[in-house]
Image (tube, rainbow, N blue to C red):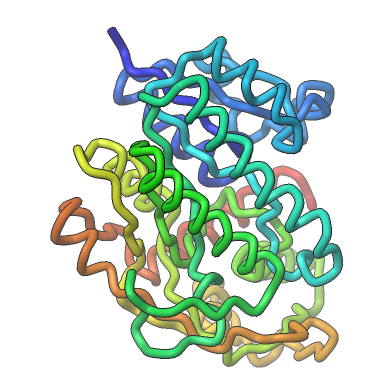
Length: 327
C-alpha cells in the first residue's frame, strides 16, 4: 500500500516542491487549500500546474477545526506536513492578530485532530529560524534559546511548543523542522530574495530603473527549498520523532545577494540599489546562522545547492519569466 501524505500550504513554495518530491516516492498526495484558490487556479495554483492531475486538493480553512477533522478522517494520512501559515514576517507587524490566530490555532487544531482521530499519523511542523530572533549565540542549534522579534516568530515558537507537548504528552510522532531561510524561483514576490532576482530581471530588460531595499547588512543562512523539503521527509522516516535545525552553516548579507544577482546580468548593484528606510522592520533580526550538525549526524542530510547557484537559479528563472510575461 502506498503511503498517503496530507500537506497544508501545498500551494506555496515548500508545499509544491514537497508534493513533487513525494510523488516521486510513490506517495498519494493530498493538499488542503483555501476554497478561493479553486476559483482562481491560474494565479493561486501556478506552482502546482505540472502536477495538478496527480494530486488531490481539499478546500478547507486552518481556522476551522471541523473542516480539518473532516479531511483527516477522509484521507487517513500516513504523514501530515503542516506548512500552511501566514509566513511573511513583515506583514506580521501590520496584522499581528490574523498571523497569531491562523498560525497558532491552525497548528493546534491539526494536532488535536491527530490525537483524537488519527494517532498513528506522523506529523511535521514547519518551524523557522525567526524563532531565534535576537540571537543569544552564533551559530544557532536545537539548544539555542528562542527570542522572537515578530508576531510570526512568536507564532512559530508557540507551534513548536505545541508540537513538542503533543509528542511528549500523547506519545505522537510529531517533529519540528527549524528551517533557516530557503529560497527558489517559486518564492513569493514579497520576499527580499525574490524582490531582488525579479528586480534584476526587470532592470536588465529596461522595465525598471532602480531597486529599493531595506537593511542591506542583515545576514541570513540561505539554502534552496528543494534541499529542505527532503529534510522534512527524512524526519518522518525516523522511528523516533525529534526536532532538527535545517541550514547551510553559511551566512551571507542581503548586500551579497544583490551583488551576485546583478553580476549575473553584467550589472553593478551600486548603480541600481537604493536604500529605503521605510522598508526596515520595527524590530530587526540582524543575523541568523544555523548549525545543522544534528541533522547531518542523525538524518544524514546536507544541503546540495550552493549560495551562488541558488542566486543564479533565481535570477535566470526571473529573466525567463520577465521575458515571457513582460512583468
